[in-house]
Image (cartoon, rainbow, N blue to C red):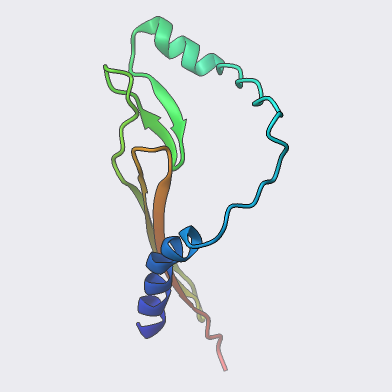
Length: 117
């Protein structure tokens, strides 16, 4: 339990540390931006059929609202495993898209493997 709390604390403090660094130029300022990616056939079909539209967001597929904004509802998962003679596994995670195109994700897991002696 202490390990999980320490990991969550480190994860929450990481963005503050990253913002404290200096700016490092990685490309010449005269370089033009890359060309836009082509629209996938699935997105074109959704728009043509009048059905709900979906855009790929930082946490996976995200629904698009009527005003063209991507929804920012959290997505999560739960895993469980079991075994004969010694295997257990449990995991859970959640990813929350942010309004500026980023995301915050947290996951925890625990495994235990003890074979027959």
